[in-house]
Length: 160
Image 1 (tube, rainbow, N blue to C red):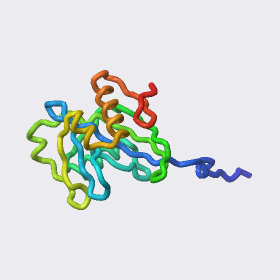
Image 2: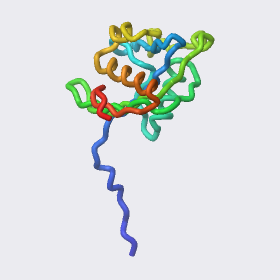
Image 3: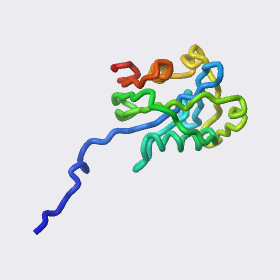
Image 4: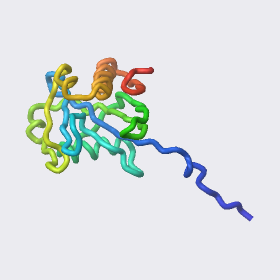
């Protein structure tokens, strides 16, 4: 008589996961978006939904937040973020979203119920707009892109 199989992974801990896109312009400024539902800026991206890969989430978020059909490039960083009072621990991934030419800028359409707007920011501007964690993550994503590598981060700090 065959034994009944059960999902041994069902009771394992779960982590929040999000995927983002590092998109730049010809001047190496980073594309940031300003959400309506929270203060501050971030790169385009968002939560990975159930039964969705992080890569597919990055594609979906590029379409939803910018109105662009982007084909993300390679993985730049994976960042484990510890739990804080206001949120659970999570794993954040950032893919290379490429460099947009000026014609693509004209096609960006942000959803009014989700984003206030978007802007390209050089590193000092980005550091003013972003919280320290995101500044560290984006800086390392830019480094990974320049180095042709991928980096593992913890709380925005490079481990490997």
